Image 1 (cartoon, rainbow, N blue to C red):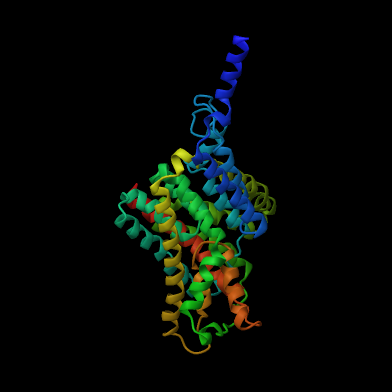
Image 2 (spheres, rainbow, N blue to C red):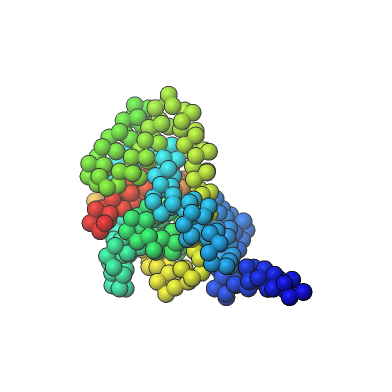
Length: 380
């Protein structure tokens, strides 16, 4: 009988019920909230559902030393997490983004790249704020990249500069990507007048196939020579786009933008979510990172809209840019461009801004990768 009782006691010690802490319960509830928002609101479900379930997986309380947890060397989760820790997954995501992105809007209106560049001020603004908040320069650089609204770039840079903060930075970046419509719309309305919202832009010119093929080659050479440290992201982005536009590698392009990016999205979402173990995630630093991430997103949107308003001072009538596309300078493709379209049609149902907004939107993807390369050059 004593042996039976002893075995039962030992079994109980290995259960989650015996090892649970309130922090684990809190993180599991947050994970369920992520899943609920993704399903009910349809906000970035491809990201929030894997991250939310990963949070639940990572916060199942367990007896230490069982070699199961994500931070235990040799465990299955730990091996999968190396794609995040070592920065393998983000370039593969960029390959898929390149293979599904049409750069025509940017090629036809090169001036729109300035909006994407201006919006990157959110990154450097958050960097300065993080320094003022007491973070080390390398940590501040990793936090600042949240302002680019680009989850893979945030993971790539934080894996190099501040791996200990990666969970909070990644979850913050993906959370604000999902909240693009909620955060950006009130800022856009606050900073623009009704007259500005009604500006109609001329239709972009047709872009030839030759231009589409030349662009990824020229774009890569220009950005890679400027910021060689951004090569893993920029190289894969432009390579994926070349696969799409060349016309002779359709199978490779379809694989890159389909099965490959889907598999990597599942792995990156699940492991990033699982990395938010309560004892490592629920800290004062994490809360501060979420606050700074929100500020960086607000700065990026504000600077993008205000830059268009300033730029319009030098443009002739008929050539002016609708400031509502200024928000699209962040890297959340195509969500921020859709916000431009939706808000624009609230005031003029026949004013379609989506194709114009895609210009600064894809410029923002390039810009965030370049910004990450600059920060990596100075801070690594």
